[in-house]
Image 1 (cartoon, rainbow, N blue to C red):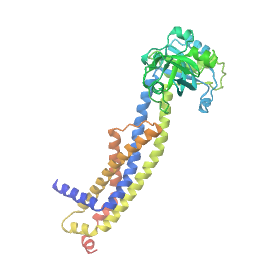
Image 2 (cartoon, rainbow, N blue to C red):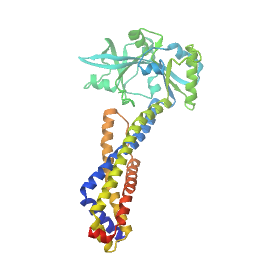
Image 3 (cartoon, one colour):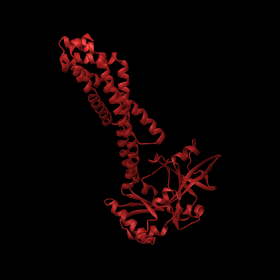
Image 4 (cartoon, one colour):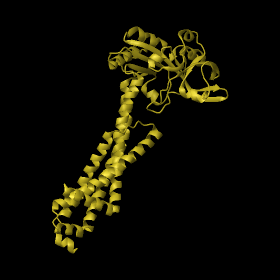
Length: 404
């Protein structure tokens, strides 16, 4: 044990004395470890975000959008879903717990006491809270009578409340929504942002009948349909059944593409995995390149170090140090440098992840696994890089080394 402590002391002194070698080796390892740590944290964060999103979205729920997937990709807004589709699905699928039309108006101008904001207005039913597991923290939602009679009433999100009512109670106040006077009945609880960065609290809810009659002037088409199934069913098979019924309702023939798009929990996971995959590919290549460069730098600097330390090595061999002692000392030096490099790299990863989260709203979750993996990988790189220089140092002839 005393011998090992002595070797560790000698190694630490060497690391401290050869500062330039240490700094370059440390930086080469640190950048590779930073990329690797962000990859692990991004993967963990994405899967964690996926399951959180599914929990919020509803594991037994789906959302059907008008227009095909391709049309939505180029932001076309062709309406293909109707109120008749809702009735048809309700009549033919007893597994449906609730079904609700959803209409929306982008960039609606909202006015209150000289303040103006742009937000999105959603036309929904009285089942909104149950449909989305999204409840009010103030006031109430509109009732069936207000829905049936197309009343000018609304519920606002927390962001809208903060912008229009920073210092007063919004309940009972009148606001103008695209010049339509509307009475505020309640305030939604905080929901945060979507994986793509959309602020979910920046919205206003109104009866869908009001939106149909006073904004869209259309009593047939809806933008989307929210469905929640009874628990215990196979969502994948239920999605296929919904697809079959909608194709029948729309009169689509075999071979014709769907004129709607169904978003399910499976789709959400697939989206987040693809989003993560892009980042993993980019950072994976970066970390491999950085670690490879770091390994080469470490190996070459240790080779140079062997030439600079020939006299030291020769003296140590002359006074009784074994070849294994020389190898162990070089290995310990490499481990010290790579462990410090991994710590520096992990700290860089934390800073980089913070910037990534701020700029791109990307889910990042650091765990002990990320740090342990960083240390293990850095040590492996160090051991591989130092092996050849250590063997070369151990094979030096003591007499010739001292003479040089």
